[in-house]
Amino acid sequence: MSEAPPHSYDPNSENEKPVALPSAPLIAWADGIVLQPPLTRRGTGPGLIVFLPPDSALNLSSKTGEDKPLDPEPVQKWAEEGFAVVGIITGHGSVAANLEAAVDALLKLKELDIRDKFAIAVYDTSVLADVIAAIPQQPRVVCLAIYGYSLTTPPSVPTIVFVPSGSADVVSVSNLNICKVDAPSPSFVLPQTVEFHNAAASIAHSKAAAHFRKHLGGPFFDLEAIWEEHTYFEFALRSVAKTMGTMVAEPYVNHVPTLAGGVGRKQLSAFYRDHFIFINPKDASMQTISRTIGSDRVVDEFIMHATHDTQIDWLLPGVPPTGKKLAIPMVGVINIRGDRLYHEHIWWDQGTALMQAGIIPTHIPLDGKTLRLPIAGAESATILIDERSVPQNEMLGPVYGIVKDA
Image (cartoon, rainbow, N blue to C red; front, side):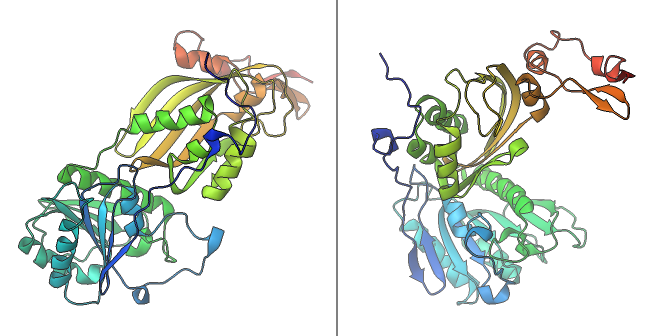
């Protein structure tokens, strides 16, 4: 017989031994040039060369510690995506010489798994013209991403360009994919700057990663298997250490309706330990309704089934057990960076959760009358499973809303 999963945290358990994160030290290659092997469990990947502005050219943020963005700077972020990354700080020698040195560095790296195709990302448009001029001398460079726009010469390789709002209209030409960004500065993607814009940076990063993978032939990962592994450690094995071992160095989880979760490894580990993994009801289960797999995320539509026989901190915080059966429709958006999770965004209708737990009334007084609240119970899960199982539009009729005088 298999051993029953634990219902409390035991730091001495074999399953709670710390899981080592991928580790590959940053290599100082030359003046202004660093080499970062992939920071994934796989440990190998294709080559990416990034041109970065010096700090002196940036409007640096004063945020530190828990106040600064969770996003890592580009060299680490792309390494977590599974790339072997050369970071070049502009202003140290010529672009052509630095690009030559970067190619040489990648070719000497044993963790490089695709040796005939490299990508470039330009975060400093002051050197863009020189980068474009140097690319034809490096036949291994097959694609380009640009943050900001100052093109005067069309690039010779497929290119994605992220154009900040307020920039002049740019006409897309052959080899050029123009993406307008809802952020005013090209520095929107650099987390150490005042202009960093988290949502815009996330969207741009996803598009750039898909662009690189398309033209390099990788790195590709089985996102569904990574997500299934994570949920196995959460709900079946019930291990904080192994769950966190499936995530990047600094991940986060956000249960939107209750504002529950954790930002960063320390907070999230404590949340999983104290408020999630060991407090879910014994009969809790997830019924998948649909699953969409994108280039870097999984979107799950599912129903959480459980008996409310224990306090479920993340779902009904502070609500004592009611013994009620729950069937809560939920949506999860799971962002995966390389072969580890970066974040989870989980949504559900808190109204139906409260209604099914029996702790809010179906009718309330309003202005001397009685209002029937437009909140569905377990039928919201039933109709998700079978669209014909529940009559639609009843809430639009006379049985809801103001139903009688007080």
